Length: 254
Image 1: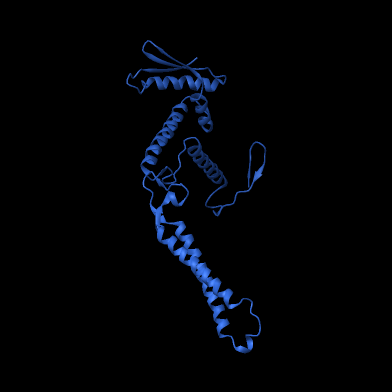
Image 2: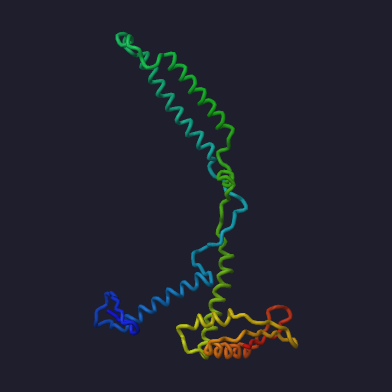
């Protein structure tokens, strides 16, 4: 059992480690680290859109592959049913012909003429089905077989390119957190603090050939102090714009 130091609530933690192998303090550290890893995964998925499922970038195939014609499959199914019906009618006709004279006095469900007429109808349907099958191709394009829906392919090259950008942005944010920790003491809250700074509204002005980026001041004194010193660290790196002009950038807080 562990107890929260603030509200004195107790919680049970189960482990297969013996008391001699691992103590309560170490168990608490591992549990907290586990939640930290899960939060990091959520951060990657929701904020950086990093998804490790291979090939999640889908594109339509330019040339759709050939698949079995669904009309042919349906006609063959109908033909098989007609053949079964024809065989059943022939058996019924055979029973009429082979029935002993003593049993012919009893009126059958259908007369021989009705059975023969039904056989002729079924045979004509089979013949018509065969003619339709001859006219249809056995294979057609995938999109024609699925009402215009096209088969997709996985663009692994685009995925790798996009993931490189996402991973670079994630690593850049992690480096910004390390810089911010020099001026901000709350390590567990460094990511929300960084989000407050980089998402802060401000002004951008070109003055004297230099791009001035001015953030609005913060009401929180600790955040304001950290933001001002973070701007000083960034300015010390000599940042410039990424266009052809490569204008120097200066960051500051009001």
